[in-house]
Image (cartoon, rainbow, N blue to C red):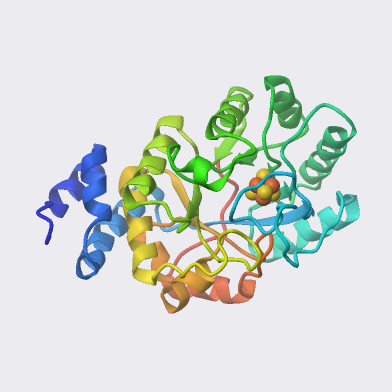
Length: 334
Ligand code: SF4
């Protein structure tokens, strides 16, 4: 490789169960574009070795949209920004179960209820959330997951688990040292503590972040190492789709090759994990979308994202068929 790294040695080490160091990962994420395909050849081997040819599909529903008091600079749902995101209060049973059935029809094995607010406290909203989780678990068509912001206590995490919650998404979003640049109303450590409570309660953890908010390549590697240390189960990788009205409006999209390189390096750092390419894949990867799996992704989202539309689910399923990947398998193990 042009920067002197021996890719075959690193790839072979990971395949044999070893780890790459932080400095080696920084070297990999710095490889120039002509070396990205070679990098992907190895990250693809690592994906197949540890995850097989199976792809996990998940879907989400925005159960409470807009008007969030937090100030995450990328988010169209923050009340601080003037965006045209629709606002609605907490959705009822029929809407949520109807969306869960659609998700199952689209091939999703997991279905997350997502809300735009700071987090959950004891009270009527938590009661309502628990009811939705119970209904989803009883329905049984998809796994009941959620992304409901900061969880301030182990007791609340345990209540969610008892209501049927299987996997909770709460992203680190970026590296700890860059976090204050994107949010001032809560801290990176609030996020880490939320993950700890949920893990303690026996809930699977889905945590990753968003790329292209102005962070450095080193920050991207730092986040991957933080996720490795936290032993998360699923790592969602989102690529900024800049929304007008937010702090990120007007930012250039990432190049498709830059996205693929980032996915590949994450596969090297987190070889056994479910790596899910989610928001922004259509606009950033464009015609190279199928290559995200060759770069190392083993999961993706079908249907719409929170504030932007995904591509037609049938197109996604056709992409998987064309690649010879299998999504018709049972839920992830507990
Ligand atoms: S990312 Fe979540 S917490 Fe931050 S503003 Fe958006 S909805 Fe609120």
